[in-house]
Amino acid sequence: MKILVLCFILGALTMGCSNITSREKTALGGAAAGALVGQALGGDSKSTLIGAGIGALGGAAVDNYQNTGNILGD
Image (tube, rainbow, N blue to C red):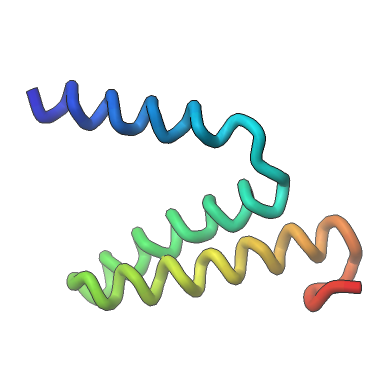
């Protein structure tokens, strides 16, 4: 039952992300990766949130670099 609820929630979240920008997609991916790394290294909620924040900023910076050639923007 828990798996079914988790699949439903993940499906609903991905349907809501169909019209986001490239920067938002990359930041979201970075946040997810950062959260996983933060949880693996720290093992608590604080580390997970810090990792997600750093990952989101990193993801947005990578997208900005790919689109403009400059990390900090125009």
